[in-house]
Image (cartoon, rainbow, N blue to C red):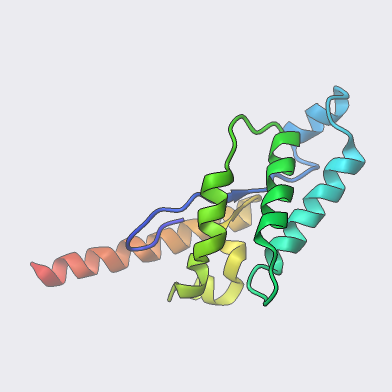
Length: 135
């Protein structure tokens, strides 16, 4: 997820019924009910991230637990904390962020990922226009 000044890591919440996680469930390495419950909690918490009283620490805890359970290789705590503290989607002027907010930065399914791609193209275009104005 790009801004004019910084690139942010997208928050990964892979679909619990996707191929990669389905294989973990079938092999018995992951409990399907626990995975699905945690997935829904993460999505719900992120949807509430713009509201007053948002609990950053609890949300981070859930995200990191889901990441670990779904096969994440490295801790994303620092990157996720930065994203959730800065909330760049609230400051973004692009139509995608204005319409769907935090959903733009969630790395999940094809549609969300395409929207983030359009957001990034918008930012790239804005930066290109600024560069051309300076020339």
